[in-house]
Length: 455
View 1: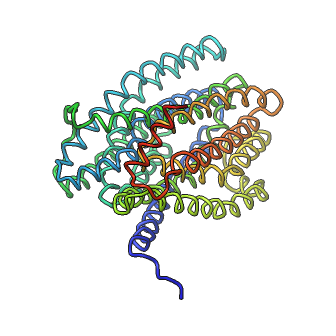
View 2: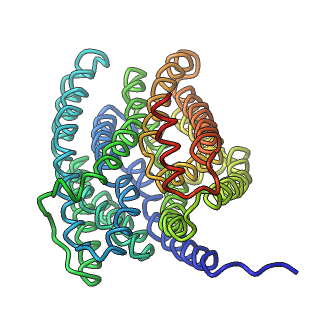
């Protein structure tokens, strides 16, 4: 007789279903943002400047906010179980992340302006426009960091739906700015992103305050944040390296001619919509449930098997839709971007670039499943090492593929990089981290740490 699913498994499935449904609603407006921008502004040197500045802001925001909110979940659960002041801990995390984000923001903006001035040979007006956009996006980074901390706290409380819905707040305001303030040009987009992220941050904070008192900011205590910082900093560095890949692609696309960077950005943002569904659905709920399950069982055997099964299921789930899009890409893209201010050559290039990215979606999502298992074991340092491999490989492949294939070559390099990094994640997790399956988790983590040092 088939054994009925455990209560824990039923709860995970229910939470994942609700979070996935909320993620669809939360990310659906984001699907229309690049379409609206393309319809109003097209692809030119000015949109290149805007998208490069937005990519730089997103790099810091993702490294310090979005990914760290996931790394914080196991620690917030521990603090809640230990009866600590979770509201103060959230404020301390937010303050620490804002401090950590300040220096990379300044350094990155300066480095981009130097690169464009020296290597990309942009027109003086476009370079000045880029400089304005880079610094105007600084408040966006701050709001995104705070929103990440609050979303992580809600996820730790199993309030996944509220956090998953929050991107819709930003996207709706951006769409309103694009369609309602055309007279301001691209500055309307900047204003829309600033107001949208601020509104998202305020909405998440208001929801969290109903759960328990929360400090907006709290001066970090070295004793309380010591363990978190070791994982969070490694996760931020690793995520920063991975988040640098889209920015690297755009910087390497900048010399290909006006509008090339914008076409790459349109393709990448559309591709990120289904990825966002997955990240805000099962990805977040699994992190909380797997962390709690690890404490209950006390060993890594269950985590190893559930990670492998989940990655295989997700790979198969995304394989069919990805193949269908690649086959029917031309008519789909004519419908989606038919009203965009593109030439026929631009639309064809955008279509093929997006199709290449979509082809790599199954292996990319499967690899993300394994990153969650590493975070459950609080081994973000190994994720950092794999991230470094990713960026080195990406640079090599971009240089090899761009001369012959242009933007499509950049997308092809991304697919190959994701495949290699996913294989590394699988091998390291099962051969090293989970090799002590069945042993108490403390012993397993000690064994993994010693193995990492020996390497």
